[in-house]
Image (cartoon, rainbow, N blue to C red; front, side, top):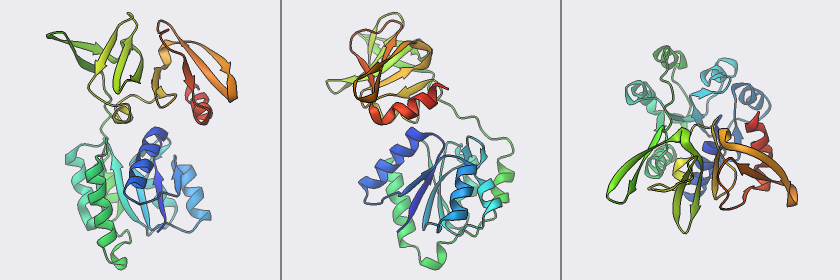
Amino acid sequence: MKVIIIEDEKPSARRLQRMLTAIDMEAQTMLHSVEEAVDWFQNNAHPDLIFLDIQLSDGLSFEIFDAVDIKSAVIFTTAYDEYALQAFKLNSIDYLLKPIDEDDLKVAVDKFKTRAPKQQAVTLDFNDIKNLLVNPIEREYKKRFSVKVGQHLKLVNIDDIECIYSENKGTYAYTSEGRNYLLDVTLDQLEDELEPHVFFRVSRKFYVNINAIKDMVSYTNSRLQIKLNSYKEQDIIVARERVKDFKNWLE
């Protein structure tokens, strides 16, 4: 079975790829823009299943279907609210609301697998959906965390956080005022909740805020060391396999 992911946010694409692997389904290709997808479809055999984000960096993903006659089955992955998603239920085309839940993903994949081959082609007029998205909903990312301090709850604004890191099975936010706060969330769960233009996951252990980066230094094995304005508790190293994406993110 041939499966591809079309998603402009690379951390989200990688997370979905890992989730598919965990349920014994492999996504062989990841595409990140309308232009890249159109070129790929024009030069490759079309897949059995597409995981398709609605709003890509260079336009709505429906533009792909305007340029290429695609008959693959589609599971939408989108951040749009429920009322707009009612359209995606037509003709058995499924959707997953971000952040994607593991159980919902499995249900959608099982639904695809149990359909007869003749039902797997896309028959929906994508203009019907585009017309419902004339005024698309802006993607909402996390703006603050509620953290427990003693017997009190404190709100920590996302702009005040220099980095988020894991340590001893806990997840911590370090703020510009030099405080660490324990968060009730894992780093993986934050992939779809943090603004991707502001936060980047440089390694399995660290997210960094671009506005808190003070310096970047070459490190061993083609890696980079990040120095933040205040955080000095541990070395922050960009994993070698993430250096290229990190440099692109900076620009």
